[in-house]
Length: 335
Image 1 (cartoon, helix red, strand yellow):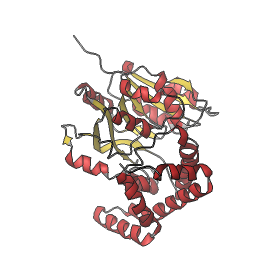
Image 2: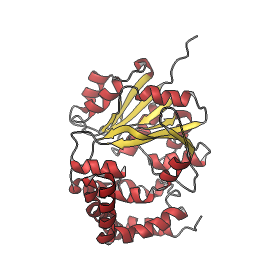
Image 3: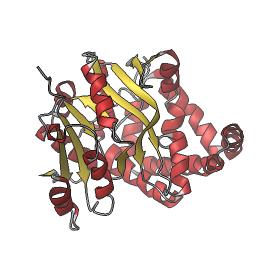
Image 4: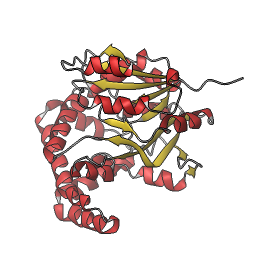
């Protein structure tokens, strides 16, 4: 008897994403995986371009409403609409690498009933701007890159499989900063954390899964998912302003940020302020890494690091909600 493959839902929040969406959804539909087991759920925040029509007509996506517009609310709407075995948090500026991506991921979940999540290295496309290639080097933004050294330790001590993925258990006291951009979750364990009222950030929900005992993950250090995003430092600054106001300060009351307040992160946050605000330090580090890797894109690092800290400090100091958040995070007892 043939066993059916896991059902998979791609959760795609959108808002006027018609220019990017076809590339993202085409990478899903070209997978060498039974397409009757693949569902695309586009949670749209009120687009006035062709986003909805393209999703429905070209890629047979199901479109649901996201009245709150923010991407995290879109993921939540799509998550609650899905009845799949596995869910993939995706974005309009993502693209799967290769056509065996889904098959490889499904094999992992089928072969390990304790597996909770799969993630991997984000990469830049050949045509992407140089700044996007710097983002590929750090895998996120400068601050998260500086904080997220726990992943290096996990990869060094984890068990590598025949497909190149490394399996390990995440310790709640040593978190990793993961979310969106191809994050795959076992739906039955993920959905309860998105079912609560209010705002749910993907990274917060992932760590809620870890705290609930679903801590076994696989990470692919090789190319996993394209992330076509920023072109200029101005793009970065606008993104950080938007994130601080819309996703952090305004939603702080709904978020469980215990994973941020662990001792290791708080210690590294203090070091980050020195590292980023004294450019000679970050410049020296960038030059060392550029020489070691042969990538000139590390030269963006001092400017990006300084700009991010200045942007966040400015936002925290000016916004009363930001000041309350600081007191909340750093007033907690050490773990």
